[in-house]
Length: 296
Image (tube, rainbow, N blue to C red; front, side, top):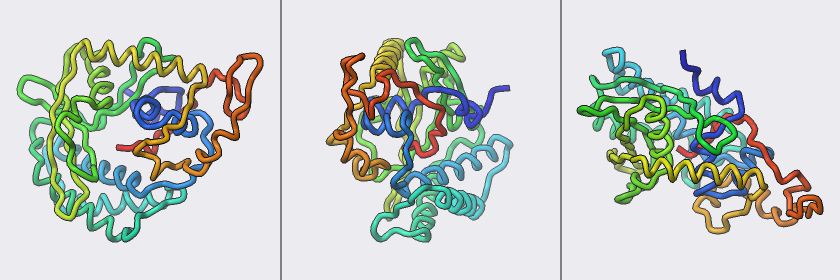
């Protein structure tokens, strides 16, 4: 029996979130989150919100797999219970101006209505919350992850991933998304067939909408992914962790204050002829981490 995602996280590993943080968000945030792991300064409410929203839809998917369905009230209550737990354990939780616990429950209710109105996977679900673990050439630890759910889409298996978003996705965003690449790569390696991939994107708005975005990958994309992964591993081993001064994630970065003094913590190592963070060896290893607040 395949281990759960929580079990897989107990051992050293790579995840899509880790690769994406290094490649597309900020190398220095990667260092703080996965290598140094200092105390989290702030947690945006969007992270526990996304986890609770995901938990509610997962519960509905399990019910559908068993031939049943939850009521609207049951799904909203599941979200509220999960959101309460997640906000209580989130370190230094931050709400945006005008937001509070009750307003987030109201927003989630509208968004769940939009998601359920778009729900068409009552009879085609093949799997829910399936964890995976694969080896990727160049990575020194396995790549792990979890498919939200798998459905039969005509003759193809389709990986479905739920996303909450502040705005609608632009055309082509799904085709460039690293998660779709990594998760499709894992499915193909484990099953020998190429899947479809579908993002169900629910907007955080007064009148939320749920849009589906299909995408697919090919062998060329997978070879490019392997090259990217190998180069990330090499850069991490060499201690390359530069701040992204214009990252979209700066405003809600959990290490924002620490980042401001980053330049004063660099120490030159004569043995390696490199600048190292706080005098550490330039060869860094990714510690086991829960990935609890991955941007979903």
